[in-house]
Image (tube, rainbow, N blue to C red):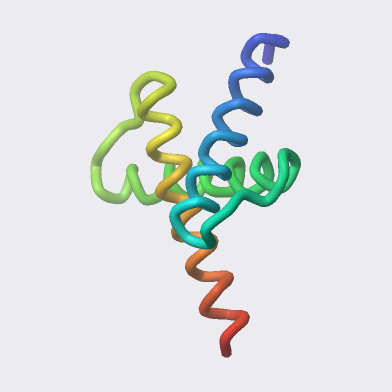
Length: 83
C-alpha cells in the first residue's frame, strides 16, 4: 500500500466514522475513534454489500459502504450495552 492509499484509507475511515457517529449518537468520537469505527465499519459494509450483490465503486461508494457498516456496528454496540 502506498502512502497515498493509506491516507485515503484513513480519510475514508474518519469520514465514515464521523457520519455514523452523527447519525446514531449525535456526535463524533474524536479523530482516532472515528477512524477506528470507520475502518471496522468498512469491513462490515463490504460484507453487507457483497451479500446483497453490490460493489462500492470510487471514494464516494467506499464512504457510503463504510458508513453503513459503521452505523450497523454502532447500533449493535448500543443494543449490547442496553442488555
